[in-house]
Every structure is written in C-alpha cells, then in structure tokens.
Image (cartoon, rainbow, N blue to C red; front, top):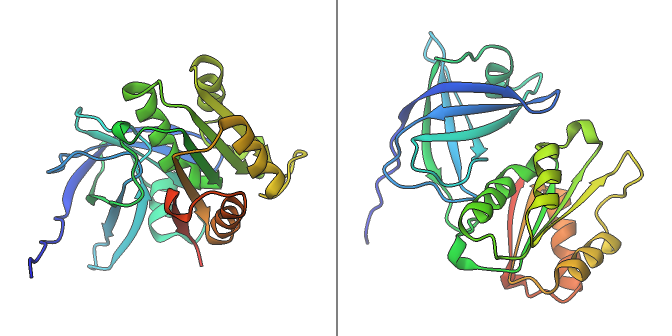
Length: 238
C-alpha cells in the first residue's frame, strides 16, 4: 500500500481585504503551494491562540487557478465562529495565518472537462462555482454554462455585480439569480426545469450549498433525467 503524506501547513500572508456583502469579506492570501489549485478546491485554515489552542475550518477557493502565488477566500462572518470571527473582526492586511491545501479531487472542473456546465449554488455555496466560472472565462469561454444561484435577497448575493456583468458580456454564460425573499422560490422543479431548458442537457452538474439545498437539487435533477454520474456535490452544515 502506498502511503500518501499529509499536506503540510504553510504560512500565508493576507495581502488584501475587500467587503463583498454586509456579512462576507474577500481575503487575498499570498501562499506558495506545491501544486496548482484547481477550480472547486478548498483549503484548511488553522489559527493558534497564544495559549496553544487551535481552531481549524475549511474554505473554498474563489479565485480561478493562477500562477501569481495568491488565492482568494470569501469568508462569512459568524457571531460564534472561532475562525470566521477572526476574519470578520480581527484580521488585517499583513497578518500571517496557516493554510493547508489545495484539497479536493472530485468537486473540480478543468477547462478540458468541457460542457455544457450546470452550476447550482445556495448562499455561500456559490464560492467554488465562482472559481469555475472565472476559470471558464479565462481558459474555455466557448463552453456553455449556466449558474442557478439561490439566495435570500440581493444584498446577500455574493459577487452579484460580477455575475450580472458576466451574464451580460460573456457569450454562452447564463445566470438565473433566485432571490427567495424578493419574489423567488425555494429550489424546486420549476427552477431546475427552466435551467435545463435554457442550458440544454449538461455534461457536468456541480451543486454546492447547505445539505438540505443540495439534497433537494440533486433529487430534482435526477428526476429531470440527469444521470447521477454527471452530478457532483459539495455540502456544508448538518
């Protein structure tokens, strides 16, 4: 049996902080991995207190694969979050943290994977899908793609302006922004059927969000005729 060495913890420096929504901030980190990051992967972040106590969380990478030595994370500030609380109220440009990655092999999309590409995100689950869209724009703009993004209201929609601009300016990319508190609905067959009608039969479908959201969306797509083998999921929460 071949033993795979665990990924090492690396030092990463915060080189940029930008508000994304009232609850989410973008953090640009300078870090040198021993392998390129792929669209859809994540990193582990570890913080260590002066008394030695450590807290660790995983965050999806929002940036497209790059060789410039930086990655972007989008972190939602949570009142009781040990790590998100640090990012929300303590972290400053120049701070150094520990990261490990990039991690993930199943929930990734490469330009050579092609399409059509269906992306379904709920809330902050749009972050790894955003990395895929950014990668598509740079490396495979001919691949048809549609993002069905469901979020409570427009103020909470991560990268809303960017997504609207991409849908306007990028041929082959279509956006369905579903605002559940502003006349939208919870994920249902009407939404998924419309997405499939607009995109056509996808070669790949990537779903990310809270566990109930992803479970429902997966079931709806299978009921609509997609092969389970074409659907890849990333879930968070209980």
